[in-house]
Length: 200
Image (cartoon, rainbow, N blue to C red; front, side, top):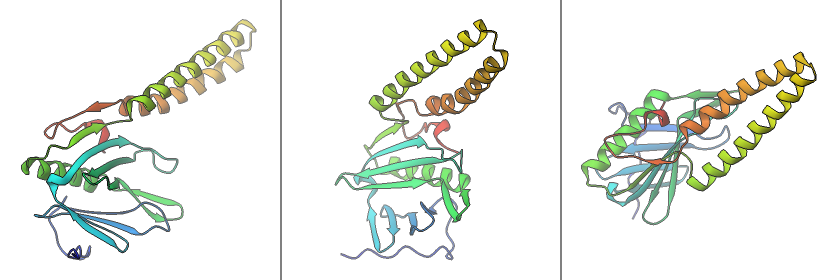
């Protein structure tokens, strides 16, 4: 049965009920809307409506990229194993990726609210998968130990410039990677307590 099309972005709708983005410069526009029947979506020629009670899982994560350091993602799966991804940024030009922080946050919060109202039993998780997270954490510890060893050797050899360079690199590394790891620690959450650090 063909699902009714999602209204165009020119139509008026309450804030936070509709969300649109482009995942890549040459990709199609992805449109999502919260309706009385469920989560309605259209990606290119494909479109469907997922009743809120058929959504099996939502995973929120922090996904920075080189052109956008504050980028967030929601991965949604239904009981049939189909998956959707909603990202907090959209491509505008070849050199511009624009954040949509407020509209993304409002849409994700409204989706959780609608699911809760319909008695959803979906699994709600945040951050990376535990195995990937702990492997990344172990690798991070090895890198830190290696940098500390190099720093001690530089100090012992009297290479002040090299020591300062290592300290600067370590500070930058800790700020970027440390923040990523803290935000993406594995966890579960509830419909009434969304993880604030995984939303813009």
